Length: 530
Image (cartoon, rainbow, N blue to C red):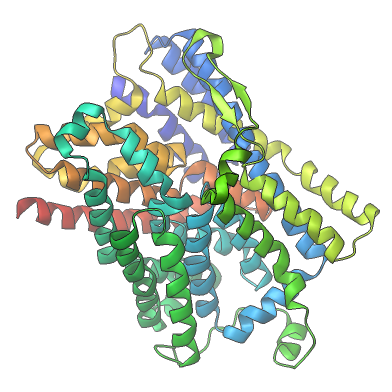
């Protein structure tokens, strides 16, 4: 019974959002209510810890809302300044084939942004560009979420590895694993991604082809280009990780891969004979190839400013990142528990998007009245999103801290982990699924690694298997779980004003994640048997 209760929040979310297709702002509060009742009565979770979990979840949602509000503002300004038209022309000058555009933006650009910023930001930035190119909002969100996966392992300057895995194991375990364990884990993780992750661009094309044309025709026509694009990012990423460590694979690997991909496209290598044109704007198609004066600098400037500020802060150049963190909104020991939260408003990606938006106001010479209307419109649209995020993140926090109870039962994460561990000799196959589950639940590769790394080590050692292998599988699975993590879906859908329920997106993103993680699990079984 305890296993069913531990999984109740996940079952409820999947049932309401995916099966019944209820929007997140309805599914979230309902599931939160069920979770409070079930964990209160069955686990006998202490009221103080339950309340503190809800408060912490609300603060986490505020952190994400800062990012969403910043991206909302930036996208609104870019639309007002007609910048998306210029971005469309730039992309079409690389290729008018929708598949090339998809791979370029939702694989390489997404990976770079993930390496720089992370925290669900990349899909929010790239999805509006794809929509400007003619893709439907559903296709744009699905493509960017699927693309924002393997890069998460080394996203935000390596945070999931440097904090998630490194801090997720105990000091006793570090003594057994050795001080250089993180290097081994990162290398093996990168190797797994290279073995199977190259299929992800093909899965992106497959999903978008299904959404836009109800067939796999366009994806199958370009399988060589898609798989080659996968290698173009993952191979440099593997060597960067090996030579420089986990901070830079997503940043440098994506840039190297992007440049090589542009060269391949220009040389027409692996390009399908039949183009897939998805742009629906007839006037645009007439003028896109004409030599018209376009102010590329103005269009790209806001993005460049935001990315530069993110890069400087995340790389902590000259201590700028540390300085920005000196100003924080802090709450500690909530309701007498050890829970707390620090919000760093000036370190948040949302703050940098606001700065980029303010500069864009002046560059596009927008009037005060026009700028004010943009700000009001951006703020008006976030109420339902905030409700959904508060509910979802509160559920996650309750699950994480449910071990603080009077029933004597382990917390929900430990119970779920014990279900996976019961697989015995098949543990290497199920190990990445635990990481996947953690990321789906928490919406973060880092949090998944923090929750389950120690469990992965203990379980693998009990079963006589390699703990380094288990940690690598945890890391791989936690990256892939970002494809359909609920609050990532909610955030991305909010930015593009998706008309469909968020569960519709998850229907298209869950299967690519399961395909890749299953292949990884099968390879792990073979490696464990050698």
